[in-house]
Image: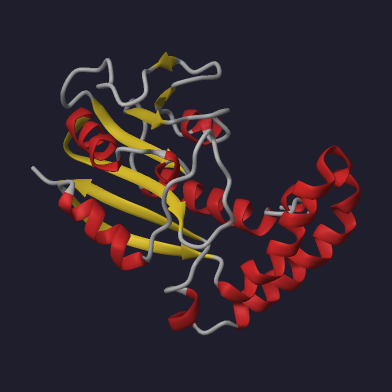
Length: 219
């Protein structure tokens, strides 16, 4: 937790990792295949492999286990993945319906999806940044793609992200020198955590920085 408190977006990063750990512990992953669709640097690989899963990271760049092409079908057979996970990817995907269609195609019947994406967050292209969701909009998008929503977990409400946003701006302005902001990040994250705990659920849940969704493929 301490490493996150020193980061400008630390509270969100810590909350997301906690949600990923809960998902891994709540599902029987041993000897099952987990596809990380848009894996980036694969920060959560150890969580899944320690649970006994066979983890496959897929992405268009970097050093993934499986190289894929943007806006092209996954080089995987139908119903071959027990779980698909997607962390902070959807906002960068131009063709969201196609991405979710491919996710559904490779999932086994009753296969599970864990997906996180932004509700409220600054623009952060990689290489582009297209979308933000409300909880209702994300639910509708996934249901139209053929998923049954099991739960949506809002992470970090408005009081928290309002505290963090100035630090994110300072990080962008300072570039490499932003490492000097670590003490200030710590104080702001503690303040943000306190503010988030005091925020009523009705406000936090509908104005979150991130939504983490667990869903099941419709048969």
